Image 1 (cartoon, protein in one colour):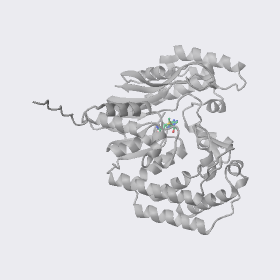
Image 2 (tube, helix red, strand yellow; image 1 turned 120 degrees about the horizontal axis):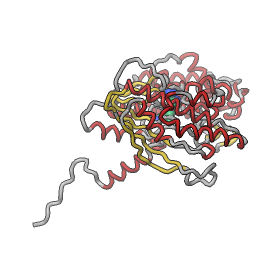
Image 3 (cartoon, helix red, strand yellow; image 1 turned 120 degrees about the vertical axis):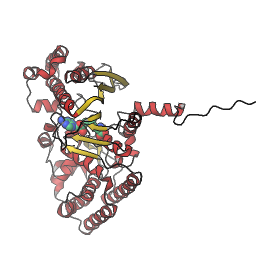
Length: 439
Ligand SMILES: C[S@@+](CC[C@H](N)C(=O)[O-])C[C@H]1O[C@@H](n2cnc3c(N)ncnc32)[C@H](O)[C@@H]1O
């Protein structure tokens, strides 16, 4: 008798599934794949992580039947919260970068009344086309360098119509704002660097017409809204503008799951990443304004931030929140203070490092009372070595979490960094991965 083939269990771990999960996990720190996903793709945020990875984690965690309430203290463009919406899980995300908050908050309006969204965007485009203005804003240096006159006239017409008649804080109004915001880069002649910094002097070959780009974006949003609504995404998800170090939340809730990625202490300037968009909307006039408008609200993870605030290393190191790691952190900061003297840029990494760990220590202290006992947290983190001085980010954050009252931590490395490029600034091997904290 021929052998009866063994029946595969439903959702059994086929080699393909295992390979797929491994691929998702290894790309968990990257936003790239999100540009193919409904709603996520409305705004490219290079600091973001993978939505599919979050959904896979949520599906696995949902299996033990505990009702999940997820919290993300650094929600950025909203990836984790939107992944929770798609997974039917209640979630709150907070963000203190006012501009990125508005982007993420607008994305959660996927449950908008579609006909109102359609009417509003059709009206905005028609009004802009009917009254193309002669923009005087090419005098603003960044705008003058980044757009042709024709593109700026058309973009400014959309902006003008929106600000005059449609900036009404309705769901459809915020989506229309996002539609305009999200086409700024594709209509600009300026290049974009790896970290989303605008490069006015690097000209791009392909530039889109603003009216065409707006129409295309709106059509895409329309399609994605239909998708989310038909797929039955839950509406139990929120984005709040507040600071993770001392969050003010509308409801006192206990969360049993945190999935997040904090800034890394790697000198990435989140304020600079949105400089073009904020200048376009008139929220900042130039480079000098972005500290007050954005950076001062954020974790101190770049040297521009710590030098602007003229931080004092001795004062910083006295903060009791640093006690669990002071034995290792202090020598690293003192070394940085010495090394910088021989460097042309004299970057204030010494105070940046001390301030960064103080801030993350405060975040863990703030998380403890809003997380239930037995909660699970996943922090996607990367270490760093400014001026080749190694900062043991995952271990130090783990120790700060224990000091705040969490019970255990373990680090799962996902990939090595700083191994490939020829123009690396130093040879210190770095890594990125997930810091799992429980208790
Ligand atoms: C690595 S990004 C998170 C990206 C997010 N996972 C996503 O997919 O879009 C870190 C975020 O933390 C935000 N942030 C920095 N300091 C903060 C603070 N004190 N409170 C809340 N959010 C903060 C930054 O503006 C940034 O958007």
